[in-house]
Length: 323
Image (cartoon, rainbow, N blue to C red; front, side):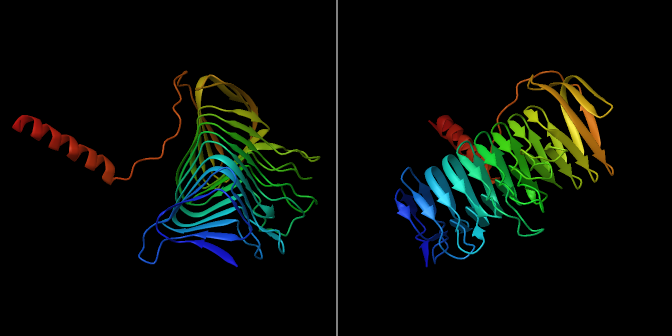
């Protein structure tokens, strides 16, 4: 069974629901806005089901509680965003089960996270298509200023642990100003704290760590497939890999890149000293821009809102002159 919220009205959940939850527009097309509060506990029951699926243009706001993917069959993701959807999260817990991501933004308009905990599922590998990242972002606008993102662990040697955060090329824009990003454990080298594939991302702060592993080559950051990382702040435990035409632009002061070592101070003032591996067209660019204020990320306003504000200001001016 599935519990469906499709009233087209604001709805609050603060109790337990042992069922798969779907949030979608009403039959007349109105978006449904659901807010999770403390006391909410959603646990999916269907085969490979997500705890919550958000569809159409509906919205999910997480202010507390917990969402867990299904444990039936091989598990399930915590949250799936599928449509022109919006997600905001300030507190709470999202947990996947098995080889699934905590949150899969398969199709989203905006994702804004300032707190809470998001974890990919753990367990034995199920093959090449494992996606046990904390957050997998495939489309839309992403803004992160806090929270904990943890990739799932792999309990055999056949695959790599999940990334704390994966950002794919369909993402329109992405800014990270804070948060803790940790790769999952495995026997190959550990999952990445941050993995970029064909996307452009600005990192202003945060802590990025490779997953624990008995293997070598622990990577806190991977930039690949023509992805661009504009690095202005943050702390890193693990090496970098920039490969397949990926680009790492580093902003700061007294920056050097010699013999594969990146050293200096980032624009935020934080010191950096990491090994960077360049493979098949990967490149590093140093921009000695000095130190400066690093502003947190913001979700851009829809294009109509600035025009509306300007129109209201002009109307007020006309009214004052008429008076």
